[in-house]
Length: 162
Image (cartoon, rainbow, N blue to C red; front, side):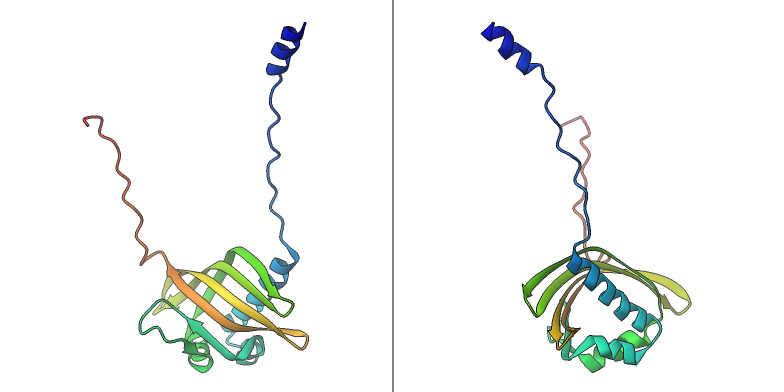
């Protein structure tokens, strides 16, 4: 009888883990909205709306030489000069550093018009937001381009002759 119970239990189908449902956290919802406001401000060339979301010491760091950060005024001038047609934020995550600082990272895809031709650019963005009084302001941005400069490893298909 013990053998029959052991054999019978071995035939029970194992439970499959429930499929993971990804939900937006409260922080992702908050900072998704703030990032959207910033990008819409740039798209509409609304300097006042953009400036309201940026801290006074805002700077952008990139992997391109010379390695110095781009100051607020230079970044804002360059970003407002772009003809931003559309943008899409994906793979966002937000992690609190403390009660007044949150680290947000995501992939930004933006379509800009370059001399009448649409150009899609993808970036990996890491933003540091800090709370000043009751408002969140973007203090630092780390932006790294994806795609064109990133090479994928070559896929080698076996020929069957080896």
